[in-house]
Image (spheres, rainbow, N blue to C red):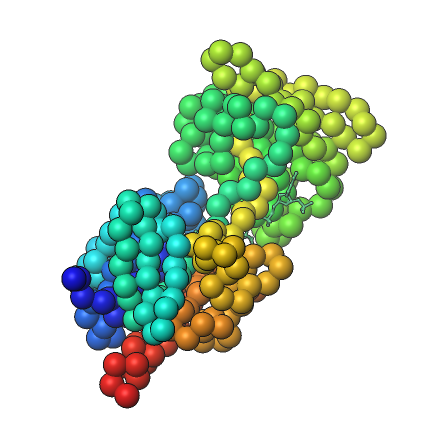
Length: 316
Ligand code: FAD
Ligand code: NAP
């Protein structure tokens, strides 16, 4: 039988990777990070990050995150590339249930499964996803070099990604349902002075349509009910994220720990959840600032807590 882990880390974004660094470097010997994809998290899809401390040049999310797993490996963090389906607890032992049918036991768990892009819900969005509808400008923007594209949303992500696309594409339409944005003021100012960005305000997408080759246009409706067809081969949607909390759902459909009504994990200032030995970090916790720096901070706090918890559990 395999040895019980000291700590299982679920998710390899900024929160999980920082937890991995601090648990291993802080003395826990048997720590595995379970990440279903490439480590780095959602910031890997960002074309530019300029608010991580110490970053002064223009760097992408991938540039920022690439060294993080390497740094953790140096201190002994193991990485298992697998989708975790459920975390359960019996007595003092947590079990990590995995999609490949295997399970791993652990004395403590730090969860940081983040969030995923939300679908807007207009006609054709699902059918044409990957065929002109995208949630990642860094991944797909280049396909629309010197072409026109539409961006849906009015938050930081939509505006920042519109600015990125405006450098590649001939024109970017930002379709937003209100006439004010929920983005940083300097980002709004940059958008407003970018000549090849057109703001389509007080408007919502009705339908994206296309042919065998993919998207050919987006139909939007404004507050007065007027319809406009925006003829574009690419539509990028950035309308927020949903918390990835599925791994906390138990067989009886209840959550392993206390959650709020938005599906976020309730934690205290030390990232303790309502279950001893389970810590929640990053975008999935209540009142998360949804920043790389705060997710990393959470990972460090949770790791220090996990070290004390395991020490007390095994030595008392
Ligand atoms: P995530 O980064 O979401 O990482 C969670 C990880 O868990 C993922 O790698 C995922 O694959 C993994 N995972 C999920 N479920 C499972 C499972 N069941 N089994 C195994 N693995 C699983 N923040 C900034 O500070 N500055 C910015 O400029 C900025 N720009 C952004 C631009 C974009 C386009 C986006 C989308 C976000 C941006 N953010 C920015 C926000 C920032 O990316 C997040 O706040 C941060 O990544 C959250 O980190 P996290 O570790 O909590 O979660
Ligand atoms: P967000 O702040 O939740 O903004 C989502 C946007 O989409 C809002 O403008 C919203 O409109 C719009 N929207 C939502 N549902 C819609 C629908 N069904 N139809 C049409 N429009 C819809 O999400 P985000 O921009 O992804 O940002 C998420 C978090 O990450 C935020 O906390 C953000 O600050 C952070 N982030 C930070 C940075 C940075 O620091 N540089 C970069 C990216 C993200 P309304 O405005 O009308 O609600």
